[in-house]
Structures are given as C-alpha cells and as structure tokens.
Image 1 (tube, rainbow, N blue to C red):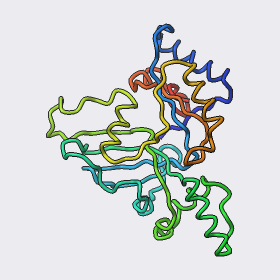
Image 2 (image 1 turned 90 degrees about the horizontal axis):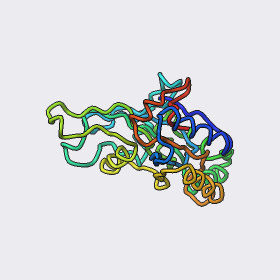
Image 3 (image 1 turned 180 degrees about the vertical axis):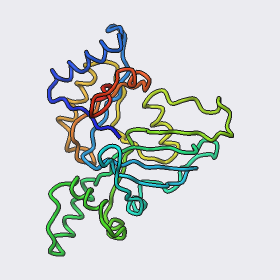
Length: 245
C-alpha cells in the first residue's frame, strides 16, 4: 500500500499538474479527467474479501507488511462482512483500500463518556480512531462508533468460471466506486470528478471554507488521475504513484 506525496501550495500543485500533463504527453487543450477527494484524517485499512466474505483487515504498516486487526475490523458496522449483489457480480478476491475514521458526533460522544467516567479525553478524532482500532480486546472496539470510506482498489480477481467478457477490467477510479456501491462498501459523498486545474482549485477553496461542515476531520484534498492506466504510465516515487498527490 503506497502513500501519497504532498504539496503545500497552489504553486506546487500547479507544478505537479503540469508535470503529469508533460509526462503523459497530453494535449493541454484537452480535458484530463481526474478525481478530487476529501482526505480523511483517519487510519489506512486494507480489506481482503474472498468469494465475497471478509477474510482479513490489515493496517498499512510499512506499506508491505501490516498489522492483522481482523477481529476489530469485524466490529465496524459500516464494513460489510459479506459483499452485496448477485453472485456473478461478486469477485473471487478483492483488496479494498480505504480509511477508518470517527465522525465528529461520535468523537464528541466518546469524549463525553470518557469525562463522565473520569478518563482522559482523546485529543482528536484520528487518535480516537487509531486507539479504538488497535485495542487488544475487540469488545472494546465494538463499543466505539467507527466508520469507513473506501478510496482505492488493489488486486481484483474474478471467478474463472465466468467468461472473459463478463467483467471488463476496471479502467478508472469511478468504476471502482460504482462497484463498491453495488457491494455495499461505503464511499465518500464528497468525491468530485474534475477535468481542469481550475476545478481542482475550486474544490480546495470550497473545503478550505467548509472543512467544519462535513462529518469527519479532513487532512487536505487528494487529486488523482482518473484513468488507472494513465496513473501507471506516470510512474511512481518512493512514496507513491506520481499520478496522485
């Protein structure tokens, strides 16, 4: 599981955007479809489903080896234990990548409960989510209201019994999100499809003003090249794919 490179100004973002256009040899007059997503301030999670059944839940760890926290993950109400949909629409194996977080209302309720019990409150929702997810006793995790949004896809294998034409390969990010919706996997309602740099800046400006109006703490805006093949063409850095920032 790769991480993301960061930029800290509109100028740096413009340099990244122009670099992607240049590396793809993209016609600057043609729109380049991208997705803009609110970056959730939570804990990265990789969900493994085999034949539609949740098999493992793993933290990112060092990007190669993570921590198996499956018993705790099974207590999160928004993560389905089995994928929805018709049998021929459920893959043999899929890695679903996303973020575990605590909503602001659930965070406040937890801190109120801690204070009533004489326990120290959590400093922020991310600490509360991380501490809850890594409990040694899943029964404690079950008492904490954790949430999950998917934002990426790893390995996907369809059953060999299906014809090759039954399922086209996933070509862009929005197709993965459509599948997630069909399977009952929650996806952020704040995602946007954009086709210009100005639209990216507009989303950054909007959530700069409205960051307190959504259900969770945010940690910036993620911009991704929408076409997964184009993402791969741009290549990677030591942290992550250069087609996302």
